[in-house]
Length: 212
Image 1 (cartoon, rainbow, N blue to C red):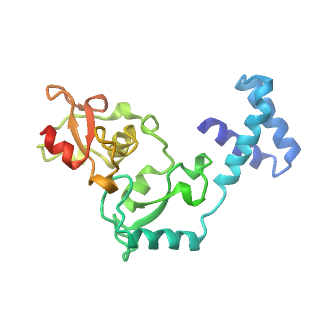
Image 2 (image 1 turned 60 degrees about the vertical axis):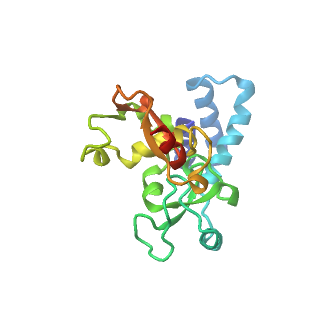
Image 3 (image 1 turned 90 degrees about the horizontal axis):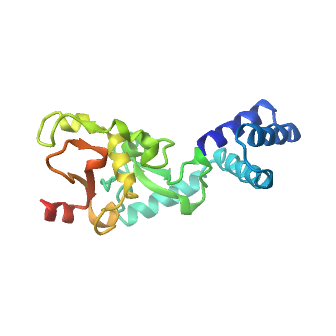
């Protein structure tokens, strides 16, 4: 998907808004290089053009202001990590930011249903990622243990986001979000194995305590 959208964007810029040339080049790419069946190419082009329109759209400041205001009134937390949001300081690690749940770079809409409040730390690290597989999770294999002083350094925010994304930013037991159940925490499935992507499970505070 990323390759399709980026390539479509490349063709559009290359053709300098000449629509017929853009469509012809994109159609040839989809047919000759990607080997899509002819009957599907027309619809794929329509979807890619819609993604490019969304990719270039900006969220109105009035919309951002309204979402921040509503989040503040409801005492909302970061939807990814569950951390408390700072509404008055603009450049803190937990400063509130309006974030696209489905990334704008991947055609995510700038309408309210796709916008959520997140802390600056999560939003900056999430960037244009989509899900766990997009974070190159094979890199998540830590040497240190949770009790070691180096654990917090090794467990980078990118890794935390990949692990949270694995369960759609919800507790793996009760399926509650951090906003409803508190910050998400990690535990190993097999205590005899190291801390790696496939051996780490995600829990809310309640189920993390139950698991021990």
